[in-house]
Length: 158
Image (cartoon, rainbow, N blue to C red):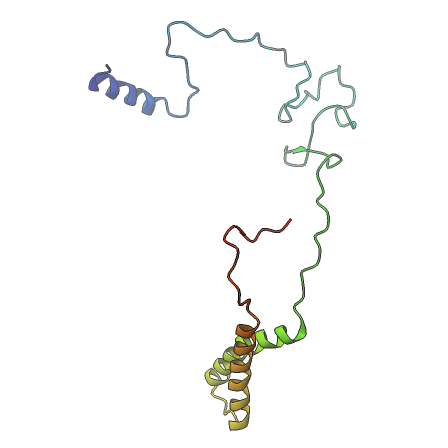
C-alpha cells in the first residue's frame, strides 16, 4: 500500500517535471526497438527529409516523400480522398401544405412585425390573416395520420 507521503512525493515530482518527457519508473527497463537512422524512409508525414541530403537530389519532386506547404505543414494529395456523392434534392411539399405552413408560421410573424413597426392594419387584412392562420392549422391537423403508429417503427428509412 502506498503511503500518503509517497503520494505527496510523487505529486511533487509530477509538478516539478511538468512538460518533460515521461521516464520509466520500473527498475526493469522495457526493451525498445533500435533507433532507425534519420536517412531511412519513414511513413510518418511529419518527418521531413533533410534538404541538404545528397541522397535526395530534388526534395520537392513529386513522389519523393512528404512535402511541406508555405508554413511547414505537410501537403497531402487529394488523389485518394473520398468524395461523397451529390445528395438528392430536398423534398418539396405540395402546394396546399406549403400554403398551410406559410399561413401558420408567416401570419404571426407578419402581425408581429406590423405591430412593432406601429403600422395600422386594415380590419379586412387582419381578418384575412387570422383566417389564414386558423385555416392552415386546421388543414395541417386534418392531414395528420389518424391511425396509431407502429411501435417498432423508429422512422428510419433505407
